[in-house]
Length: 389
Image 1 (cartoon, rainbow, N blue to C red):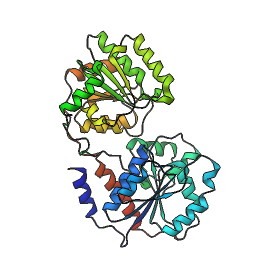
Image 2: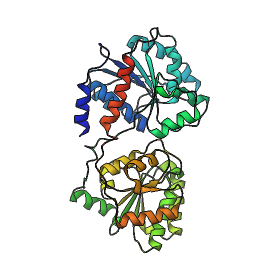
Image 3: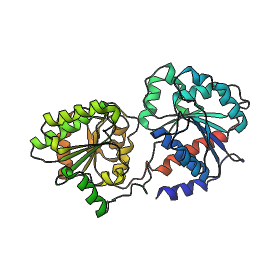
Image 4: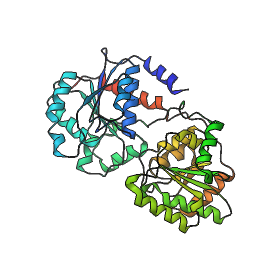
């Protein structure tokens, strides 16, 4: 089922409360990021369901898209990590009083704190929802994300993290609503056209002629670029020639790190087999021509969107079995799991997958419409209960 048809099924379901829902989502800004994309995707579903969607943030390049899709934006910096944000509690309270929303949904910690205090002065008080998008350092500062009337966890990993570090949290208030991808944007079995392939391999001729391994991720040590380089070198020592694309590593602010990784590739004798690029807009096509997509973060991640994108395209994924990535691989592609940091097993498993990768079934979960339906179900359930006087 496509994301569009699943969403159409969703919006035909009657909303529990008799009036049009107004939902306000709070974020620091509307630039690129997982929380921001999710907020826009939920806004789109609200509009499709005939509800009112408002996002309050300091603005950013995604505002035009939000408004083009029928959502509303109110400019207010509720995300700065400074005392200035606390000074905006009164302003936010006045805005919420005028909007009279049914739901106020905070997607990060500073907006959640500002909303928490702003809501104290509203009668009746809107229902408060939080989404835990990441595995933030536990403590009093992060605890605010567990104070929602409902707490949305983007994976079972996040759900377990919350209950482990905040055991006083009522598990009944936590809903696991995984992030999802649009299978129409990452269609099963997709292959780029000849024109794209010619242009790509003309731009990167050193990637042609051998199986392609792609590691997507920004230029930070946490993403495991060194292990990916060691993997290519280890495969070569076994007589298996491969090529490695470090997609998204190049960033002017991380030039020293990129130089370090280039030097490592040279020391391991694979400099001519590794390509470094900035982020690209043709990730779908790059994944589709990759023989393996790698997810080697050495720190657990809350979800693992690239795992879903690659598997949706029917491309094998090889990754470390922890956090959200390990959770997804365990369910969807167990053959791609490797113990964290075990480069020797990484090399062995890569050789096996390059030789004969197990088949990949079309996604039946983790679709965009599944996420949208899950969040709207949380809203509808709350809206069916009286607001606190």
